[in-house]
Image (cartoon, rainbow, N blue to C red; front, side, top):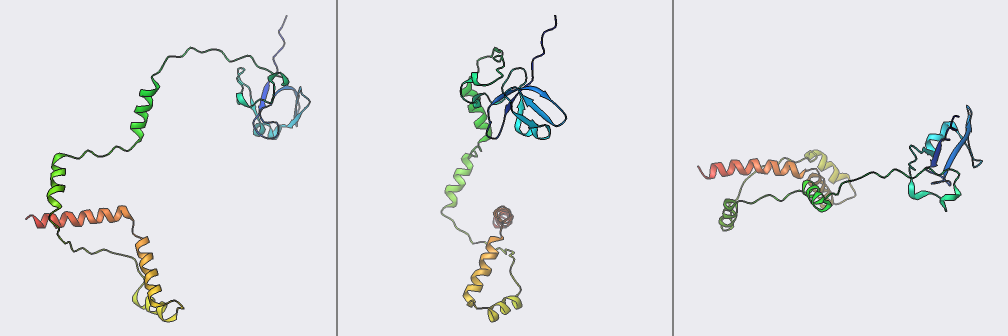
Length: 185
């Protein structure tokens, strides 16, 4: 004697029926019909329903009311043996791998910081900035309702906004390296 084929089960993954488990009664080219009397268009079924595979409900905590209210109740998932894991050590290793580590400061670096604090040297450097040409700025000042100071302040703001801090630091590093090499010749 052949065992009756188990009917396919689905769980609603959105809409008013979210979490409800249903069992397929039948389907045709256009619709799928469930044992609870509901129907869905086949073309949108994947969007609203998730198939229950091997008796595992896709959204276990989302079932409506008493689980007995649903037409389809899959068997409980099998118990899988697991091994104990030291979560604290694993978590600490993960966090250490993600968190930016503070750079280690060597003894020589500390000494240089201390000795440098008493000696300040001026460095002359040229910085390239993006600003309007003189004749454009003059035209703005002469033809604008804003004062000269307001226009100059706007130009300064735009020039400063366009400076990328990483590029500026790299530029200054090169300039300072050149200065220090010449200073200690």
